[in-house]
Length: 142
Image 1: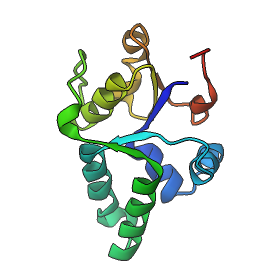
Image 2: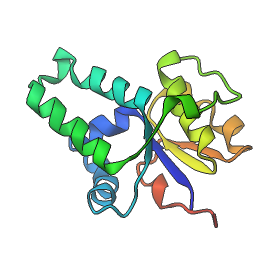
Image 3: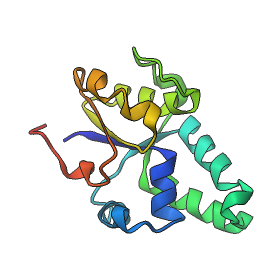
Image 4: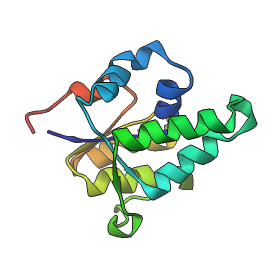
């Protein structure tokens, strides 16, 4: 089975926006049918984004969302995650690319253009990058 990594925008769709496109993914997370990977750096990124005034989330709501996510994911130590062989044009997205590479074979679900344009390159080494919220259902025989 492929490992799973979710970028911050996907997490926002699940936890903040309740995006219906992410309904199956949200259900799988809540039922613990899947348990994706995160890292200290990805948690810091998510906390930073949640705290932005744009989302109008009180501190307690931010903490609750972050706590839920921590409970749903395998949290890896950043020091244990080597850099991937690729460099993302958006430095904020590099942490997700590195995490997906370390956990190969893996699927990284993202809406970020900087990651999506790398999909053909990363697929050759076992990292599927997809904007499909249901990409976690694709096993590819792994």
